[in-house]
Each structure stands twice: as structure tokens, then as C-alpha cells.
Length: 89
Image (cartoon, rainbow, N blue to C red; front, side, top):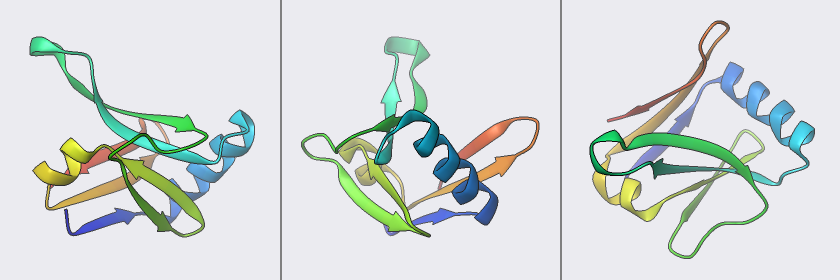
């Protein structure tokens, strides 16, 4: 993966969520399994083995190694009605 892009509104939302959860970072990973796998983001205290860590706008994001290998970039945005939006490119 070449880049992690986070919009300003998403940074603000993530910063508030990290404060509320008393967490140090967010982690993006593939959850579920079989035909129902999905992209998930959750507050964490530290990265897992193999995660790639990015720092953007004062926010730390750990990305699962499988996503790093499979995407050229990840974009995180925020919509008032839908919340965080994560796009893999």
C-alpha cells in the first residue's frame, strides 16, 4: 500500500472516539469470515504483529498486513449520517 489518506472530518471524529474509549490508536482489519468478511475499524492500545502503522493529523492507524498487501491506498472519510467511510483503492 502506498498511502493512507484521512479527511479532516474523519481525523476529528477519530480523535474524539479515541478520547472516549481511552485508546491510543485505531486498527483497520478484515473481520468476519467466509462469504461475509467485512472491513472493520476499532480502537486499540497497540498494533498486532505484522500491522503497518501510519500517523496522520495526530492520529495513529494500525492497518492489518493483508490490507496493506492488497490495496494501493486506503481513504478514510466521514459522513454525518453514515459515520466513518473506508475505501480501498
